[in-house]
Image 1 (cartoon, helix red, strand yellow):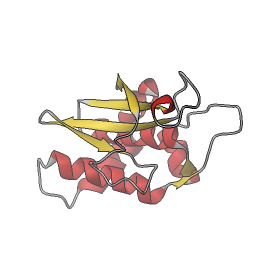
Image 2: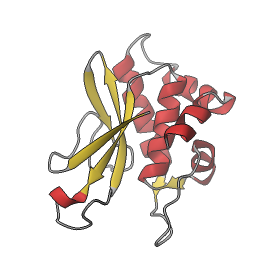
Image 3: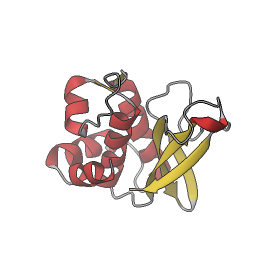
Image 4: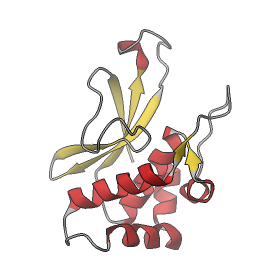
Length: 147
């Protein structure tokens, strides 16, 4: 996911998309940019699970073209879009379900992006509409991976 997000952040399509998402926002408002990117992908992509028994990660372009993806796909798209806007302190937060429901010991069940802006972590879960930008579920144990 990291390599895909970094590679696609430099593509003209993702750069143009990123610029179009933030074009009407006040300049240098990093939090507004992060939330706008999260909301764009949240509203654009229909959540659909991976193929049973097969973990896949789509590129941001494929996710955009199909209009569908799971948390890995959407998180990769969010991260690449933020990177295209110059956001630097971005990481994926992978959720270990063992703390919340006792299933799947050592298995990661969900991933989303966190953007650190002025030292403040801003969770941007674009695949779960129940969780607003800037908030995250408090009952999970997470592992952070720098993009």
